[in-house]
Figure (cartoon, rainbow, N blue to C red):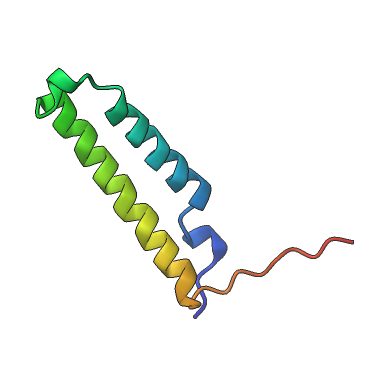
Length: 72
């Protein structure tokens, strides 16, 4: 059974979350690396990257058939 497009994660949202997570990490001063704030930002970035990578692998596998819209 083919998954519905609604069942798939939204690639744009995943990419945006990864960008925001990286931005958050980059905004932390060097002196706070290793702090609780940095560890939380690092976990967020790692999770966002894992979700983005899983999405790319799913789309590259060819197991997902995404039908393009036909425009008149």
